[in-house]
Length: 306
Image (cartoon, rainbow, N blue to C red; front, side, top):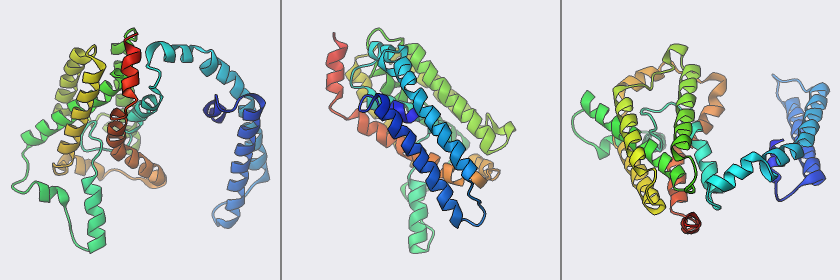
């Protein structure tokens, strides 16, 4: 179903169904073939048959989903009514923001923390302990109040930058507050579920700290005042807040409390998934900055005036 949706409007009808079904069958066949070379796995013709039938059924349902969701469906009508015509890339980017909350972070909405990873790579490469954060911030250890203030800034700037990225894509008649609250709610729900699954159920709200609460409140106040600002101002402020968040999150040491919480994190079978989640968490602010600096926003602004 998803592949048929992804092919629209480049490929439609029976050709989209055939391509989706053939692709699914080939993937299933490849997986069963590879299992011949894995000692802990046993290939099964029954698995191949059921997977192939499932792919074919899903491909047949695809055209119906296209009509309901994309071609003349309500989702497509809302897309044209609420969002600028060149907002597709931004919508994909914003859909990834709640998913970026899955990987455990030192601070709420503290994405783009690349220096610890680079420090680890350099330490392995040169076979000595290298800490780029300590080099950028020499001196005594940070106090509790400094960590609190840092988290407040990171949370406020992170959520404001993401929400302003959404707001600068909206038309005038779109329900701005509702869409922003839905995006923030999805991010917090994902964060809560991820914390519960990756650690323990009693750690589901481990991200609720005084600094995060203060930053979230400040972010809400900022968004309430900027929701109806000009799109150019929203885009520029989104860039500023994301850059500020990146600077702060990459120049403060690891939070000792968060480090102790990580001791209960057993990656296990989610090892590969955690790697993808970490990459998304680190790269999202940079992808957002790239998108916000695209010249297509000029077309969006012109469209918003009509």
